[in-house]
Image 1 (tube, rainbow, N blue to C red):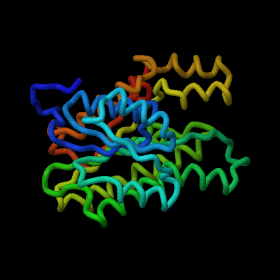
Image 2 (tube, rainbow, N blue to C red):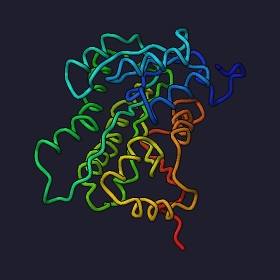
Image 3 (cartoon, rainbow, N blue to C red):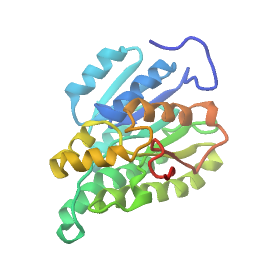
Length: 256
């Protein structure tokens, strides 16, 4: 499954940690890392799905750590369980739709814990314990969302957490640049995942179809995001840090 020819996009000899690795975008990023010659350690709460990922990619290429990154114990378990790595993709995330007037502290803390606090605290521990290799073009890729650029109604919980991530990424990139560790974000539009499918439980099918029609290139796929992640993990983007890469099929840039 691994590529044999080394190119600027090759991840040969690199070990990447991927959070949210059991499904959707995170799982497809794991697949693409291995296909690009790298090794991956996947993190998620579902050990059964992580075992399937390792079985698919091969034990020589993939390993996993079952952990809940919304807890300090989960973060400590991950940091203790990994060797020195060459990259991190933080793809774990949850979404909750709610009008402003119905938002309560519990739901706000739940989304921020998973989408934002976990990223900051995991990176804090990884850098404190020097688990991210320095001076070798190591790369951190954070999966944010184009939602934080827009302000869609009822998306305050999700949009706020992703906006915090995107803003924080520039500070982290600045702090880690002296160690030649790059930090960038990917801000996808709507991607066809289980999370996107859950939209129909909150919105009408007609509303979802209307939204999809506004994407000139249609909704994206997890593979589209994985391709962008490989670019940012690889030497193809070695002169790039502190940037946000929007991939949204032209939804918010192309106007009739």
